[in-house]
Amino acid sequence: MSDSHPGSELSIEQLVHALIRAVDPGSPSARRLLESGLQKILDVERSLHEVTRATRTIGNMLTPVNRFPPEILSRVLERRTREWDLITATHVCRYWRYTLTSNPSLWTCFQFQPSHDLNRTLTYLERSQSMPIDVNQDMRSPQALEMLKCFAPHIARVRSFVIRGPVNKDTILHLLRKPTPSLRHLAICFRGNSLARLPDDFLGRQAPSLRSVYFDGICPTFESPFPLPSLTQFNLHLPSSAGPFRMSALFRFFASCPWLQKVSIYASNEMSQDVTLDQVILLESLTELDYTSEPASRILPYLRLPRLNRLRVRLSSEPTQKLADMLPCDGQVLLAGVTKMSYRHDRYSQRIKLSGDGVDVSLTVFSLMGPIPVDWLSDGTYIPFGKIEDLTVEGSSNIAADFLISVFENLRVLRVTPRDTQFAQKIFRLLHPGTGIPCPFLREIHYTYSEPLDPLINLVQARLQAGYRLEPVLLAIPPEYDWDDEAELRRLVAEVFVQEKGI
Image (tube, rainbow, N blue to C red; front, side, top):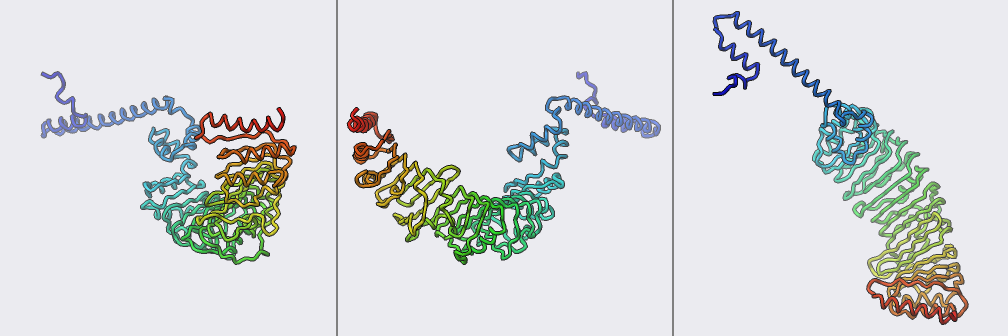
């Protein structure tokens, strides 16, 4: 027989109601007494519940995780690596939730993925209050357009605006027709669509804080650009589906950005060259330029860039490719400090890399149709290659016979990686005292070995016999050679020094 009370498994309220049903229906006083007792019992129960909850709250506050000052807790979440970490942190306890949700600076980053919904956008907007916000929207979300429209009343406090994925151009451009006084970074990708034309009232013609712009499938084509006094970085990507665009529109945009420092342009289609060489544009602040054009559009000769120190150019081949086409106007100023050069020629491209004190230049001509005729020094183009002291040459026998070594009178270090024997013979013949040029300051040759070794041996012998210093000669041995091969090669080179110096 059980010792437990038959009503022990019932709640207090259920037990009292059971007693009420058990009393004599004809005894109102008994019922009133029980109902009064029930109310008092319920009041006691609520008080006990509040005391229990308060006790738990006080206990939680004494735990180490809840003893973080609000400022420290907020600072930790500001450095979160994933946006979901912020949401998770609000479910730790009441103290964390109150601290985090009452800090509007934590809710300013709208990095939304396709799985995110409209409610999350509205929650972030409410919690961010009046703080500047950063929008990074993936347009593959089913509710992407609805989420994007939520930002319309808040566009004045948008600090960065990044849109990627399939984009509704009309919605985006309508949203960006209002003034954006807080906007610093703007990136819009219309890839796969036709070239979008920016409206004349783009950004309400007021974007005083805008610092960087990335356009993919958009060209700044408005006829009367407005000043962008803070813009320092501009990236333009025009895929083949974008269609042609006018160079004059691009130049008008440049003219509205007096402090532009970095420009990157990729064009898959030919530009409409509706400018003349007497319309050269001066960009006084530009220090870096990265330019790729598959049809080799002639934009560089129209730019004067007195402070440029980093240049990346990739152009497709034309019947005659001139060095002047790959350098901005007065390009020799850019190369005046160059002391190191590498030249690479392969089946599909020719590339020159130049560097020196604060100078970094890479010029590439590419073609899928075979060897590329490049006339680097045509039309009297003056490049001070005489200052180059370190030269690296890599390629095959397709290299021109009058390679640039002929102008390197101050050359000190030569690094050669031949693709075939004819290549090595051609390069070393240019340095032979009897058939080429003196290069009196040449002291080191770094040679990546390819059979036979005779061109290098003959050059070393000829230069030592002519009285030139040449030490050391360094061999880079490919991995496929074993130790015996390497030792034999080094012995042959060493014998040349022993014989010619009389050691």
